[in-house]
Image 1 (tube, rainbow, N blue to C red):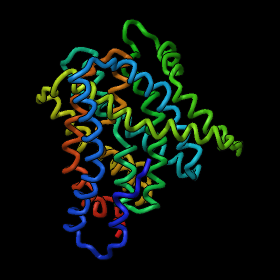
Image 2: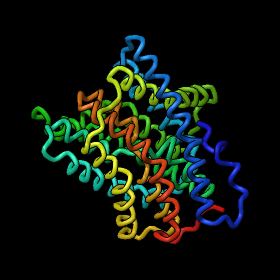
Image 3: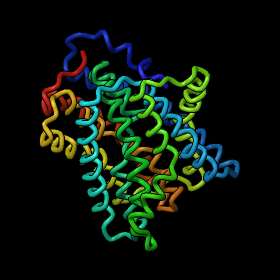
Length: 332
């Protein structure tokens, strides 16, 4: 994944007033969002013209490409253990609070739909959107902290997402839910990656390149999966619940993260990166998990689409407010 190229042209600016910084943020977001819209749009066009097996596309991503991505990131990213644990705990608490907020957004709806609202608010896009925006806002130091959050969110997504959809459903016990989670390769890829890092055991170069090649295919396939669903199902029907859930994700998320970070005593830089990460829209991977567990795919796709479009405005606002809220200066 190339994360810095659309943003590097802003890195040498000095002393830019906040209003111009906000304008640059809009431009940076456009650079990040346009490829997302292009790939998803092509998927929608393809699905509207041809019958595409969406289940197969989702399973290829869920069981093959996503594990390769998490292993690739774990093997390539320098991580400070103490800082990673502190940020990881803050992410976990924020995640649980956001899941609860999403649950409230779905009150009065059928069980699967309410679970889908919970996952839509609780699982956010800390990868292909969160990483480049963190690089733009806070430079390399912020990018490295955002990578730690990306790793935590990737593990959390594949651990918590299935539990949200399956626990207590059809009489499923906690033990059954754990077994269901452990069948996902992303969990085992995380264990393998952590073990290799702790033991300082390098993979053979050919194997590393193969993992990296699979990892690079993850983002396009995830976006195609969203586009394929939208093309087959048509434009999502936007209703008050979708607006509420999107607002909970884009506004409630960073507010929760700010409170959690202050309570846990995060320093200014870590707090700012956590708040910025929690302001991202719903992750498209939430759609893949919803499809795999026979949840309300339409609801998850609707929140993912609407929150992504609205995030152009909300993320720019969050970045502008971060120095005041956290005390962390923006990258000049």
